[in-house]
Amino acid sequence: MEGMLIPGPLWRTSARIIVFVMLAYPTRLSGHSISVRIPEGFSHGYLVLRDVKRTIIASGELTQTVRGKRITSRIVYHFRDGSVDDETTVFLQDGSFRLVQDRHTKKGPSFPHPYTATIDATAQQVIIQEGSKPAETKHMDLPNDLSNGLVLTSMRNLPPNTQEVEMPYLAISSKPRIVKLTISTEGEDKFRVGTLFQTTTKYVIKVKLGGVTGAVAPMIGQQPPDFHVWVTRGVVPTVIRVDGPLYEGGPIWSSELASAVW
Image 1: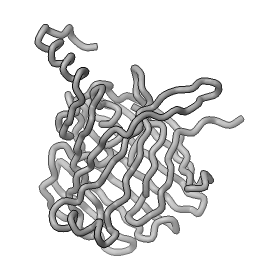
Image 2 (image 1 turned 30 degrees about the horizontal axis):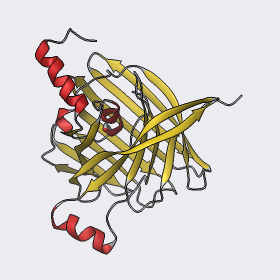
Image 3 (image 1 turned 180 degrees about the vertical axis):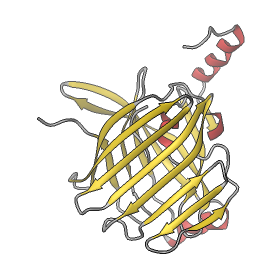
Image 4 (image 1 turned 45 degrees about the horizontal axis):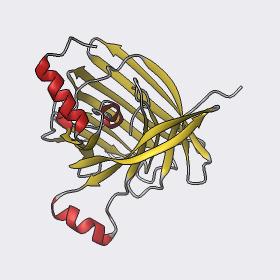
C-alpha cells in the first residue's frame, strides 16, 4: 500500500472525560474521524518484498519530505526481474490527513496488467493509462477522506483500543470504483530485533465491494483477499510488515522493513 514510517495544549476537564471513555471502551471509527496524533516528518528508509517462501523478490526505498502542512511520500520497489512498483503520494496534515494526489505505476513482468494511475483529489479526476494504451481521464466524486496512499499512515494514528475503522479507497481498473476498507484488530504478535523481543498489534484489512457486486463476488471467487498489517506499539507506532497482493489476483507478498548488511 504505502510507507513504513510514521503535546499539545492542556486538556480541559471535558476533554479528559472523552479520552477516558475512548480508552475504556473499544471504538469504531470512520476514516474522516482519524486525527493526526503523530505528525509526519522527514524520513528515509529501506524495505524488502518477500514471496511465500520468504525469498526476497524486490528491494524498496521510502523517502518522505515536508513543506509546511504538505507531505510528499514516495515508495519505489525494484524487482529482480526488472519490474517496478512506484507510488508517490502528496497529502496534507492539518488536524486530519487529506489526500492531494496519488500517482502509482506498476510495470514489468511481475505485473500482468501494467498501468499508471494518477488520482487528483483536488480536481476530482482520475487519469489511467493501461500498458501502451492512451491515457483516459475520468471525473469522479471523490470523498474528502479518500485513503489511497494513506492507509498505513492512518493506521499509525489510530486511537488506542480502536476496534474497527472504515476508509474509502479507489480501486484502480478500467472502471475505477470506490470501495470500503474495513480495518480491525486481529490480536498480538511477537517479533525480535537482535536480542530484544517486542509486541505488535496485528490488523486485518478487508475489502468491502458493496452493492450487488459485493454480494456476488464471494460466490464466484472474486472477493479480494485480506491484507494483514503489523504495527509496533509505543510512543511512535511503526508499520513493520504488510502481507497482501500487489495487484488484483496476485500472490500474497510480504513487505517488511529492511536492515543494513555489512
